Length: 254
Image 1 (spheres, rainbow, N blue to C red):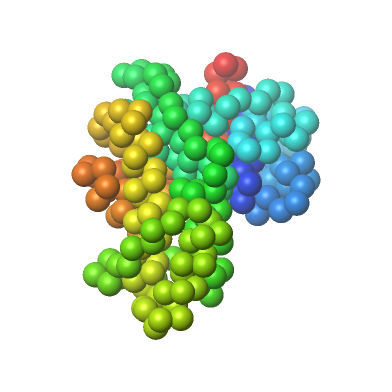
Image 2: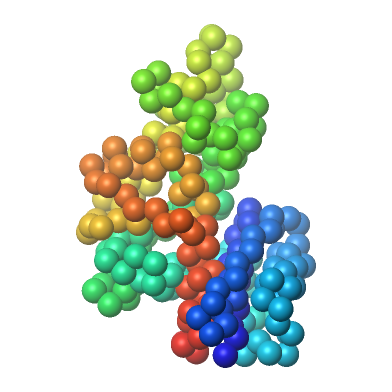
């Protein structure tokens, strides 16, 4: 059986193909057309695996752009897909923190990896990858460089979590000659504080896993651990958690 899981995020589209236990994965910038990007991801997965399209049994989709994914046999919520992906990658985990481009989520899991409860911030850019992306541009950095650009010892408080006001605040801090590394550390702390507060309201059970593209950022991981007072696990394939979950659910035909 050959299955594909595609996670269409606002920033990146991730795909995983599973065939006889072997996984192939790829990631593309989502761009302006989630539909076209999803097709490109599938084509790349088929190329990597040497498979023909007709050999694919099922394709499941998830993520921000799943409503536009008309090639999917089924679409599933990110909550369910991240839960299934983490149950495979880190089965001991009981709380998932996922920070994506447009939203952030906290998911509580039961002993069998089932979703017990969840909370979601999808009304505001604060505490999301988009917030960090805008701030990185303001600082003249690529968002992928933020993690290595911080210096927690020089951390400056960012008081506003509104993207527009925070941008103005950063411009003011830079104008006063404050170190960029301290501003970046403050940004990470503000994101960590916002997401940790949501996690605490839901109720945290350890171990905790951090998923999504922002999980690659060591500064946000550090800030989360400080705000939660707990260590946070990050899988080497943290960006692919949703796509993996979708592929596994396709394999199980859930």
